[in-house]
Each structure stands twice: as structure tokens, then as C-alpha cells.
Image 1: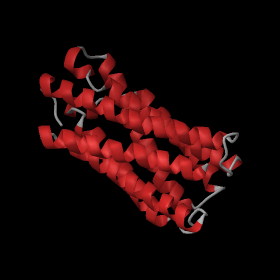
Image 2: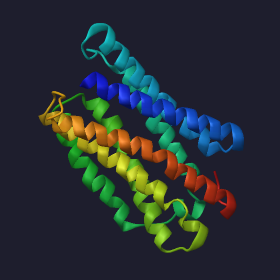
Image 3: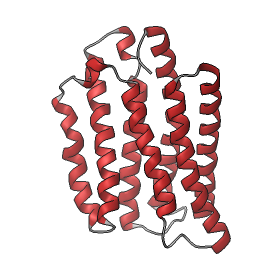
Image 4: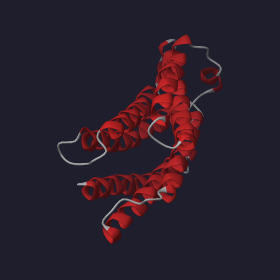
Length: 216
């Protein structure tokens, strides 16, 4: 089941990278290039993990090759999020955005009891930043009309990605084995859907930004 799960994630990220690359070639929009990098890096990480499973019939004991790819993909997602934001949005003060660290820091402390501290610091730090910016952007959009609200679906997609990651890590702490009856399996499927959902939401945000005069 772990092999099927990783093959599905590899397929989704490969298709995402392919479609993003086609969109970038047609429009030359920076946002599509960043989305291509996000999907491409995630796909390379999934490819290494999948090939290891196929060749050795076990998960990698040292998985930093995959982790480098996955961390790089989230860094590109952070840059994409910043690219689709306006200067006014980035400087907007929102108290609710602090829910991101208030929620993420206790989870970080919990995850560190189960795994590598440095790895958890990097991952949770990026998830906190993504969710902080997404909540701030959604709060800013509520104060605006028209083109300023174009990226709402994208930021909701980012929050879904963050939530799915947190949920998967939590499930992995209690149910490390992957099977159709394991919550970890279904949480990973949820993450795959969240990753796929970033493609249409980014497209909509870029298209509306193009006609609305935004950055990106």
C-alpha cells in the first residue's frame, strides 16, 4: 500500500509539473514557473522514495534525499505565495494570523518527541509561515473588493496543504504502519488531493491577477 500511495503522489506531482510547465511556456508568468518548481521538487522526492521501495522493498533508512526535495518544494511554495501577494497585503496587520504560530509551535514540540529536532524545526517553521501568510491574506481580502480578492482560493488551498501535512505527521506518530485501515494512509491521500488542488487555485489567481493588474 505504501508503494501504491507513493506512485499516486508521484503521478499527481508529475502531472502538476507538466501542466505548470506548459502554462509557463505559454504565458511566461513567474507564478507558473514557481509552481513548476514546487511540483518538480516534490516529484523528485517522491521518485527517490518510490524507486527505493521498488528496488529494496522497504522505506529508506536515510531519507534525506527525498526530504531535500520536499523542503525545496515548500520553499518554492512560500515564494509563490509571496509573488501572488501585493505590498499592501504583505504589510497588512492581522491578529488572527498569529493563530498560525499559536497552533504550530505546540505541534512542533510534540513532533520533536517523536523525530529529528532539526527536521521538525524546518518543516514546522515553513508550515507556520505559510499558514501565517495565508490567514493574513484572507483577512486582507475581506477588507477589499474585486481584484484584491482574486487569490482567496489559492490561500485556502495553501491552508488545506498545511492542515493535511500536520494531520499526516500526527497520524504517523501514532500509526506508523501504512494500510487501508490506517489513518496514516488516508491522511496521505488527503495530502495528495491538497497538492493537486494547488494547481487550479494558482491558475485562477494568476489569471485574475493578469486581468486585475496584480503582481506575479
